[in-house]
Image 1 (tube, rainbow, N blue to C red):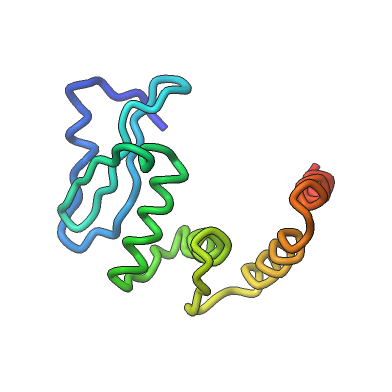
Image 2: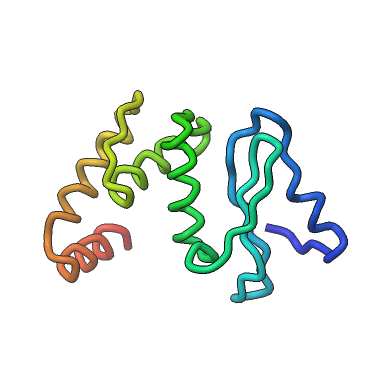
Length: 126
């Protein structure tokens, strides 16, 4: 996260051909000014209901799914969890032992009632 002068915004919205899709968010404190999806030399500003972090993640997951792209390694397991639990689309790629452990724990927690699951998750991670 960094402060960016208004004139420097466009420099952060550049991607090269074959770059993986990613999210770029411009904020001022707690206020979101703009959200973009960039990748493969294309820049798209998100508007309406997609102009939120949740909306941007949904669009990003959709792009990977529609174009059958592999998630970038640094955050592939996080995206796989979102794909499964948010988009309700099973992840069929290769996974690590750590991923399988976290997946089972999340799956167990999310099968319980939301209030109980949130409380148990909070207790486990204090």
